[in-house]
Image (cartoon, rainbow, N blue to C red):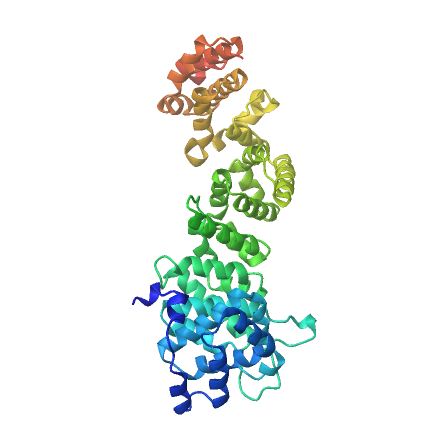
Length: 452
C-alpha cells in the first residue's frame, strides 16, 4: 500500500507482536502489561485507563518510538497517540506530567519528521504541534518538559522543537512530501504555532513569509477556502511582528489580500483579512498603498453587506476611519489620483487650478499613464454626467499642459470617445467634450486661449 494514502483506521487494524518485542528486550514486562490492557480496547475503556494512569501510557508510547524503528510499529503507535489526542486534545497535558520531567518527550517526533514516510511525517507534525501548544507556561508555576535544568543528559528543548518544526514546515512549503496534503498540513500547523515568538522569528529568518504569498488567492472549493483562511490567519499573526511586516511590505501580499477580500463571500476569510489590513494600516507605506489599490471603495462595498461577526464589523469601521485619515494626509496629486481611481469625479478646486496642473503634469506619466487611461475609461463606463464632464475637462488639461499631450491622448483612442459625448443630453458634458475636442484638434499652442 502507498504510505502516503494510509489512514489511521487502516493502521490501527494491524496486529503488532508486542510479546516478540519483550522477548528481544525492546520493551519491558511492565510496558507489555500496559499495552495488552490498552490495545484493541473500546474508546470508553481506553479513556478510563488514560484518566487513571495517562502519563504511564505516554511513557510507553514514547519509549517505543525511541527504541523501535520498524515502520509498521512506528505508524501504529503514532496512530494510537493521534487517536488519543483527537478524542480529547486536553490529553496533550499528559506529556508534561512531572513524572516525565527527565524524559525526552519531543525527540522521537522531531526525528521522525525527517526520517519517516508521509503518514509518519504528518502524524509527527500534528502531534508535536498539539503537545507543544499544551505545555504549561512559566507563569503556571511549573517548568514545561523540555525545559528541565536538573537533567544530567541533554533533553530536546522547546526552542529546539520549535526551530526544528519551522524548518520542516518551510521545507514542506518549498517542496511538499505529499502532492496534495503537504502544504495544507504545513499551513494548518503554522496557524497554530505562529503565536509563539520563537516560531515567528525562525519563520522570518528562514524566509518563510515569501512562501505564504502565492497561497493568498481567491478560493472556491471548501478545501481551498480552508487553506486560504489558514494562510491569511498566518499573515494576521505575522502582522503583529515588526520584522515580518518588513517582508510583507516588499512582497505582493497587500494586493493579494485586497483581491481576496474583494471577491470572498466566506465570512471568516473576510474577517481575518480585514483584521490584518487594520493591523498593517498604520505601518510604513501600507496606508498610502491601500488607498492606491482602491481599498476605501471596497470597504464601502463590504459595509453594505449583511455580516453577523462583530469583530468583522468593528474591523471594517476602524479600517474605514483609518483610510479616511490616510487620505487627509495625502498630497494634492495623491488625492486627485484617489478621486480618479474611485471614479468619484467632481469639481474639486484642483481640477481648475493651473498650479496643480503645472506641478503635477509629469506625475500623469506614472505606471504607463495609468491615471489618464482611467479618465478615458470613465468616458466609456460612467453614467454620471458630472464625472463625464470632469473627465473631459481633465483630459483637455492634460492635452494643454503636457508637451506630448495631444499625441498621447490620440494614441489612447480618446478622441472617438470624447466626440460621442458631444451629443450628450447634459449641457455640462457637451460643453467640456467640445473644449476637449478643440484642444485635441488645435493643439496646446493654439488652444491655450480656450477657457472652460
